[in-house]
Image (cartoon, rainbow, N blue to C red):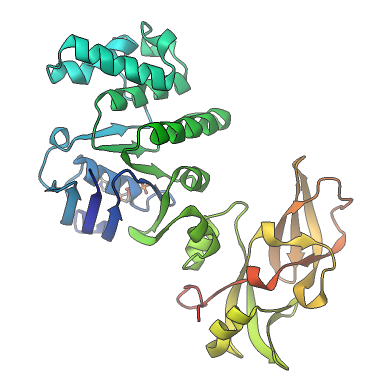
Length: 365
Ligand code: ADP
């Protein structure tokens, strides 16, 4: 059993740079957590502190029932996969896999059994005699995974392991890592700047910005209920559209309006927006929630098409709505639409997100 608990974790680099700020996070035993955020947000530093590769400025890290703050990496019972694979170039794949176990003086028969098991899981059979330079990037990363598996650690730590691979291979390795975690459920922390990777791999996604955790939740909850504008814009591709609107009341209906848009809001949003009547707020619309077509007037607005991106499976429309640029996705690929066209985009009221313009936090009832 190995939960990981981060308790008020802080990292200062010198006196000027506060890279990780009061991070509180509990990663359950066997849970797969993806730490995601833009470059420089402190995710690798957080991972490296869990690994023991970086000192902690303040706070506590527990793995299982031990406080590990002052334990060297080798005593933390963790295995780490890096972006650059970190394989020994002069050794065969087999010897790379065996290296850590031989250091621990494990008998050769047990080493072989552990390697057989990892080989089976990762399909490494044909590679065992090769040297790393005779392997593709994807194969090298698979060996690096194998080296972690054979050690049978309490915790797997992944530091952007797929970012050196091309897009297709990245997608394949993602599936392999997911399959591996299903076969061998081990507490895992996976650092990535790629929100698709985080969403597809994580039981839970932890979004960081400027050293702080912004939101931790299941992929569906961070997508469906982002707590602030940053998370809303970071999770989801293409990114959420943001428009400045004023909240007003027309009869019994609460509307969000700008010179170019007037949309009735849902009952739940109406309650949440009670305190914002007559004020400006930021409205968020996901591209995939915008449909081309009239819909009902209170659910649609006029847009001018600027760019048409035909993807085969769907069309992405880049449009202008007043002063704002608005992207619409999931337009059927056979739709006849061209740059310069005037169209209407419609959206269900329940799909609208609203953020406070000052705090940028989501507006909730
Ligand atoms: P991420 O992994 O999210 O890209 P990092 O955790 O690597 O971000 O870095 C967080 C912040 O700390 C960045 O602003 C980075 O420049 C800074 N930083 C990282 N390592 C060091 C270091 N050894 N010395 C000084 N600053 C560092």
